[in-house]
Image 1 (cartoon, rainbow, N blue to C red):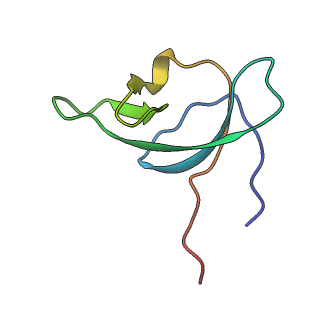
Image 2: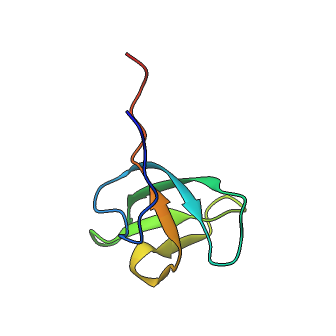
Length: 68
């Protein structure tokens, strides 16, 4: 599956490629449901630096699927 960069934020949990504005180097980010509510949170690292995906600007590609 070919992933395409999009400004649309993740709508489900999973692993995503993320590219912040002005940065050419993408990074792999885990997106999961928050502990208190159902908000999707991205772990921007160091581990457990959880941020609501609706507050993150940039481009996303994913979620990644396991190999078949």
